[in-house]
Structures are given as C-alpha cells and as structure tokens.
Length: 235
View 1 (cartoon, rainbow, N blue to C red):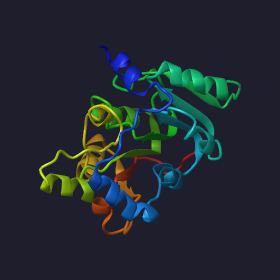
View 2: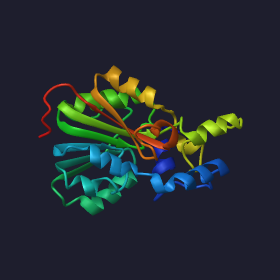
View 3: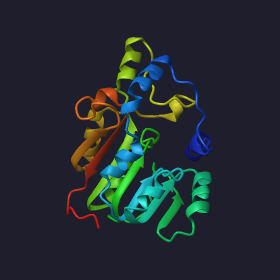
View 4: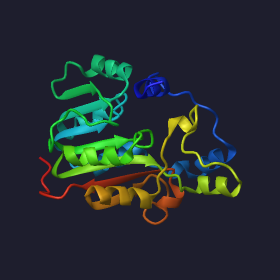
C-alpha cells in the first residue's frame, strides 16, 4: 500500500470510524469537559489575519469558513482527493479559495515566502516526517509569518495514568492503530522542533483547565505558534 492509499483508506470517508474510549479516557474527559477549549478556537485566536493563509491537511470545511473572516486568500491542501472534491463543490466558485491535492511528506509546489500564516491542525501526528512539515512551512512563510500547529498531548494526565496501569498511551479514540498516529509529542519536543527550524517567539496554548500553569498535564491537545524572523507585518 502506497502513502496516498494509506491516507485515503484512513481518512477519506465522511469520518474516521470511532470506537468507545477506554474507561480512563471517559472519566478524565468528563471531568475536564467543561473547561476545554477546542483546537479551532485556539488557532483562530492566534491568527493575526492578513493576505494569504495555507491550511495543511484542510480536510473538510471546519477551518475554511472562519479563515475567510481574516484572510484575503485561503489555500488548502489535503492528500485525500475525495475530501478536496467535496470542498471544491462547496467553495469552487470562490476566487479567494484555492484547494488542491498534495502530499506534505514531499516538497509542495508553492512559492517561497508567499504566505502570511500556515496552520496545520491535527495533522502532524499523521505525517512521516514532522521535521519536513515544519521546515516546509518555514520556507513558505513570509518573514514575520506565523506557523500554528495543533497535535495531541501524549503527556496529559490520562496517558500518565495509562502508563502507571501498564497500558500503552493513546492519542485518539478512532479505529485502527491509534487512528494512524505515527508520532507523539510533548510540549518540550514541540518547542525543540520549532527552534531547530528557526522559528522565534514560540508560544504554547492548551485547551484544558488551568491552561496557564498545568496545560501540559491537563490538556488532551496542545497548540504551538512560532514566527519566522523578519518583519512583524502580516499583510
């Protein structure tokens, strides 16, 4: 099975098959549910707005619609042809929206320093080389542009309890081997990844309770932002 076929099989449907979460996850999620902030809300708060934004792994329309309020041009890439086809049916007549099939595991056919912002939400855990995704984003960003990445937090409380119980940490409740997640991240490993790519002004944000102090422990997901050195103008 090739790379494209693997992703098509895992994610091309209307939604990935769901299985019932383990007891530890169900209990922890219920206790923390009232304090959670979604990945999309966290990302939109961090986006400064401007000319052009690239959504890596755009999937369906969850990110496209709100981005129209902040950016003049929206570019979306996804490896799944069926997903892009459905998006084209919805947004194909909008001259400010550009959608195409592409594999972020490879160099993208896009201009250097073209985008004011790049976002990638719930994607990097699925790609083969996280270094490539971050370095490619750096290439595509204008000086002063911002990269925003959201990933599961492997070090959150539920997974620490799993380890104590002798179980394997998981970062998804979907079918398959952890829904095809290939990589696992902590706040420290994410910051290191961004620093090594050259990003500055790196900040973490969390969707769980006590987000300023215990986010790395109590949040299931985390979001990191970094700025490419240069002008602080975003269009």
